[in-house]
Amino acid sequence: MREISIKAEEIFHIGGWPVTNALLLSTIALLVLLAFGLVLKRKILLVPGKLQSIFELLAESLLDLMDSVLGERKLSEKYLPLIATIFLFILTSNWLGLFPVVGSIDIAEGGHIVPLFRAPSSDLNFTIALAIISVFGVNFLGAFAIGAGKHLSKFFTLKNPIFSFVGLLEFVSEFIKIISFSFRLFGNVFAGEVLLMIVGFLAPHVVPLPFLFLEVFVGFIQAFIFSMLTLVFLSMAVREAH
Image (cartoon, rainbow, N blue to C red):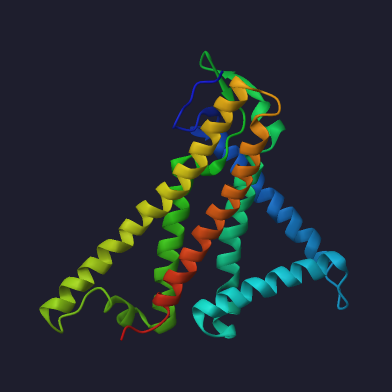
């Protein structure tokens, strides 16, 4: 049985830059999405076929969901690329980490047996980076939407002591969001990987299948939660405070 490591294992270096198994799989996930997007773009038709109709239906469903949060279709279409990219990237990364072939390839590194690939979301560096992108992206978009001055006034105001104190709490909460975002995603995916590893070691054939399907569901739910929380925070950021 492999050693359980919270830290992603380094597998090789590019110059002085260490490449971990989680970073390698996240790069593959990015390339998969890029290739899929380019292929789909070339096959877009005025009269959609079955595959294009399915994706148009999914896009329309996501827009309807965003409408319920943002309140208007114009805003939903404007911020759809951000929300959809976060969702698809996390979902693809989570599901690629569950492939049997992905989890079965080991290499020797530093006298230890380590997996060549690891689910990116089971690396805290990956989830913190996503959380930083999400939180800072939301604040930048909010500043562009209503103006930097009005956006900053949500956190820093001298109207009265109560508003000033609440604004400071809101400012601190922006950094707390990074912690909650990153540890929620990391904890759920890492715990699932450890569970599958232990169950697969104790009973390597049929028994792990229910847990594998559970992790497929968990991977989807975690991607959905992360993207929807980003959407909710975005909806508050692009509106002026009352």
